[in-house]
Length: 239
Image 1 (cartoon, helix red, strand yellow):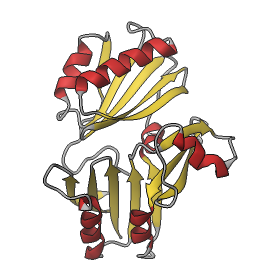
Image 2 (cartoon, one colour):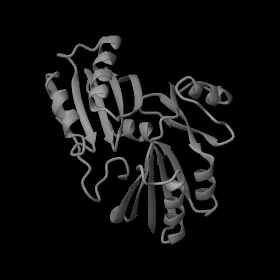
Image 3 (cartoon, helix red, strand yellow):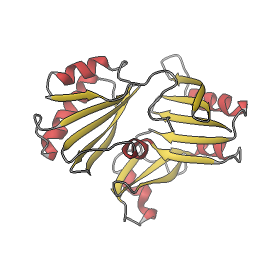
């Protein structure tokens, strides 16, 4: 059975076509000064029109989200909670929920209704997930203070974890690697993570973000690149 995996980021769309976990084809599309506002929507139409798949996996890395404890049940307030982090247009955004039982947290996030309806209209088995939940589920932290950073194209997400408990999650646009580095250092000071006692782990588009990594290495004592996105072995789409 062929599976279509879709990853939506702030300025692009990446997809993989796989069979029995073997990636057969993958491609990325990113907006730039020459692309129109409907660029991602048009690329989604082209991908879905191929119809050479029998199931779909959708991952949203769009930074419209909020993180809550697993036992939080006031789902009606999901939109309002997300609005504290970013502007929400309810008529244009579908409210979604991803639960991570491993760490006892859940993510409310929104996904463009236009994209959601196009995908659902195919009437195929489809699973939607938030990138933060998928990333978190792949982590196996130890009993220490850790920062796990997953890098995308002009974007990243990161977790602060202590004693196998999630302390903080954020998903940021990274137009300036220096700004992101400053934000990480500022965050450490606010949550009581000493620079010398914190273990840093980096995943994703590490080659594309070499400048950020080299600058980070100047400040931190321990940094390990766990995973680099190699062709046909994309971390966030794997599995």
